[in-house]
Length: 397
Image (cartoon, rainbow, N blue to C red; front, side, top):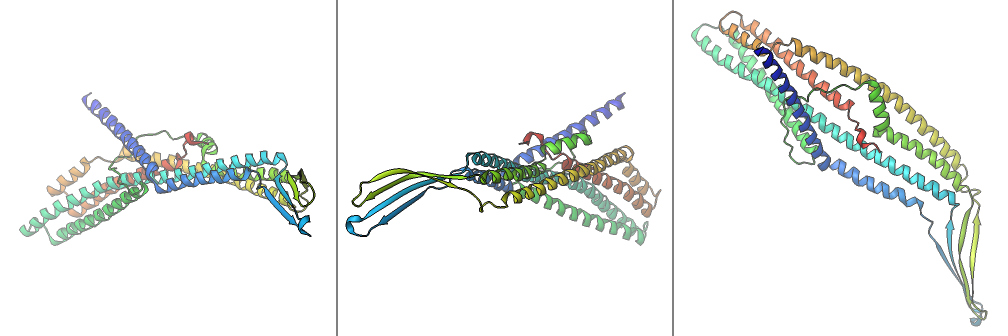
């Protein structure tokens, strides 16, 4: 009963620690979202694109004409004309809808940039966790190799160990030192990358345990989420809607355009007069083939959007299948991988002379490789899980 309680407490400790790791990653992502230069630049670009999208739905610039004529000084006169060109009213409604669609599409593009940066930051956190745990494993190997090197150097001097055994241990120590140094360098690079993503500001993230257990969504849930909330899909859908709206707008622009204004004639011997100016412009040539061109672009946008949806569906299935395979592998490793006591038994057997140095390093390498492979599977699993669940439905436009 006592052993059962110990096991339960250990499991609860691991789950809570994994949950803390998840919370710490969340805090890092909040900091990155606030400080990242790319997200800030994308946010400013979004505001500029919104302003640009709204500029196309205003009236055309008014025109002012002043005509001065004279034959004799007493006959000098002038004509002042102020005109405003107005499209057929339905065109302004179509332009307004086109402006709205362009603003929505720009928002999807910004959200895609934001999600990409945060995904990179989360994957970097997972890489730091993996490299930190691997560094701990390599440091243990280095420490053990140093202990054995000192012990066998004394044995060699006393004549109870031969040169081959000592050489093997010295090579093991050298290899352990080199791998620990290379992994520490990779860990430093990952931390620098995370700091760069945080706008160059330091980030305190030193976790060595991966996030806790999270349920794997079903394929149907993933497909529904991505098709509804993936900003990349939203942008393609927006481009398709924009192309269709441009067809409607070009049809509206094929309708007559009006000119209205004010005219004043004065000067000379005749009395001054005021009046209105009304004109009609029939677009016989200016918009020729524009509707056909817009229809062709709309067909292309629809084809691109549909192809992207099909590719997304296939990609989600492949990623989820791989995730399920990794989940099964990581559970198998957790079930069969020996604990640290296996290494302790090897150390005692070697010290007692029950196994040779060669056998010791073979068995030790097998245990170490199993632990390393377990860390790699955990890293790949959590990295893939982050990629598969990067879409946040709360940010849907």
